[in-house]
Image (cartoon, rainbow, N blue to C red; front, side, top):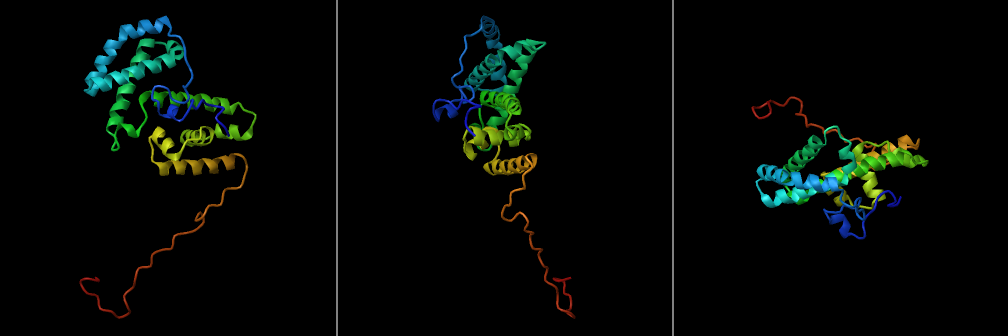
Length: 226
């Protein structure tokens, strides 16, 4: 598999640029005048809310930048919402909630991607699932039928060539959990394609039962053995 589904950026730094995730790298658009008006009218209110909830003006400002960047990225979809203002405010609330959880992580906020990364990644996964489901190749169609976490791991590992640590960071899970989802995805793909299951070491091994020592016949029970 190759990186034909996604843009992986111009170099390894693109993966770590929170302002331009790999699936957004290289994309550019002229700011719609309606978006500029929306930003000018709402930015102060959004910033005040974020500052109140997060208690830090610097963190709030960075988050608001991500919120408006995400709204711009999904501008056409946002405009199609029945109530655009309500939908955009919900984006803000979701961003603030995510940032709170991110900063409460034991490994700190750097242990999880930014709000913009997380949200645009979700959109990329949804669109890629649709594209893969329409491919004539049976394997790609089978990948599109995987569960969300299995699908994400397969795409990130085999289409984008990311390491298990990078996948764990983006998905907010442990590296060992990445391995688990990858194994489950492999098994599911083989089932969907009518292939025999993989034989893995220890798969059919049963753990020996622990044998509890027995007292000799005729032994007198004491308070310790009673």
